[in-house]
Length: 140
Image (cartoon, rainbow, N blue to C red; front, side):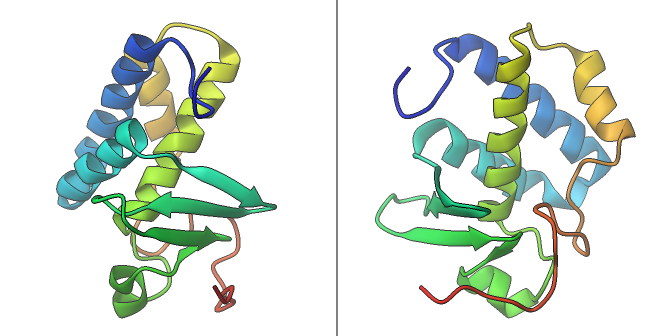
């Protein structure tokens, strides 16, 4: 396994496609951001720094943004405020969903993507994807 990714790349791509389709069907205004987030998941290394702190790269791969307890330090998130679904938060959400699916070690199915949707697991503009959505921010 390279970079912490599941060696079943085709399975991951299919699963990612289903996750994005399901999320976009529920929140169509996030479609573009979800597609950019999927790009990050596929082509950039998302790394756990510790606890509930993650390092998510920029699209160009030249910078990293810290996502801590569901809050991102990118300018888009800071400009729009707590709960905003920036592409870095969405990428982390997709990354973690793929990790869970990989741990189940099964083929992707529409039923599983529909279950994510039914569970209300998709991020919204006002909900935190990673737990507390308070005003705490980790200094970088």
